[in-house]
Image 1 (cartoon, rainbow, N blue to C red):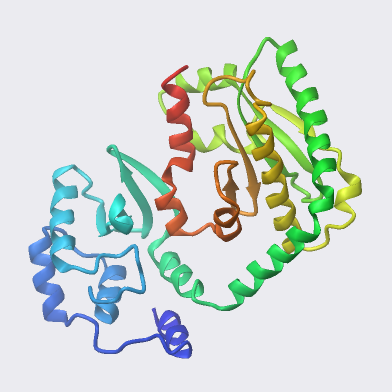
Image 2 (cartoon, rainbow, N blue to C red; image 1 turned 120 degrees about the vertical axis):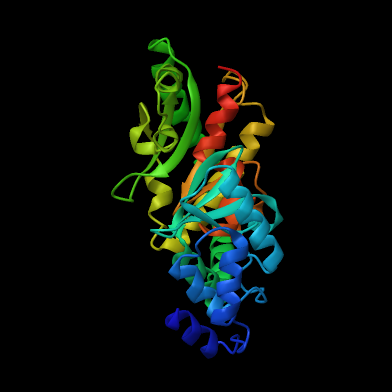
Length: 314
C-alpha cells in the first residue's frame, strides 16, 4: 500500500483523510456479516469508500454491506465483495490470497489478478507515457498500410491449408486464434477442433482456458509473411501489425469469407496479453489493455463465455 501511496503523491493524485478509522472498520465488520481480511482493511484505512480512483471498488458503504450479506447467503463464505464491477457484475476477492473473481450466473470467472495488483494497475494507468506509446503505434500502423494486401493473401493461403487439413480429418473448426509462436518471431494460425471441444464438454470439470489457448489447440499452421516481418523490430511494430491484421479479418468477414464455417465460429488475434476481435473498432483495439476494466466490461470475451456461446449450438 505504501508504494501505491508514494506513486499517487508523485502524481499529485493522493488525497489525505479519506480513510476509515479503526472504530469505523470495526462497526463495518459487524454490519457486513463477514470478517474483513487484512488486505482490504489496509485499503479502507487509506481510501475508505470515498475515492473514485479505483473504479472497481465500492465507493458506498451501504453497497459494500448489502453485497457482502448477499454473497454470504449464496455460499461464497471464503470471499469478500469488493466492488460492483463498473455497475455491471460483482467482483469478489478470496479472503486468503486476494485473488479476484467476477460472479456471473453463479459462476466464478478468474480475473487472473490479486486485489493488490488491481490497485497497482489502476495507478499505472494514470501514467502519461502510455498515451505516447499509443500515438507511436498509430503512426506505425499508418506506415504499414502498403502491406495490407500482402498480409491478406498470406492469411488466405495459410487458412486454406489449415482448413483442408481439418476437412481431411472429418473435423470442424470452432475457432481460430492468430498469435506469434513461442519464440515470438513467427505468426501462426491455431485452430480449435470441434471433436476435441465435444470431448471436453463431457468432462466433469471443463478447462475453459485450455480450449482457447493457442498452444493447446489441435491445428497449427504458420503464416508465410517473411517480407512483412523484415520491417518489424519492436513491440510497437508488432502491435501495429496486429491492428493491420485485424483490418484484414474485418474485410474478410464483410466479404463472408468464413461463411462455410460453423455458426458462431470465433476468430481473434492474441496481441501481447489481450485478444483482439474483428468486431472491435480500431480505437477499441488500439486502446485495449489486459486490465481489470477490460476483463469486466468485455467479460463475454473470456474463455468461459466464448465456450458457453458454442455450447448452446453444439
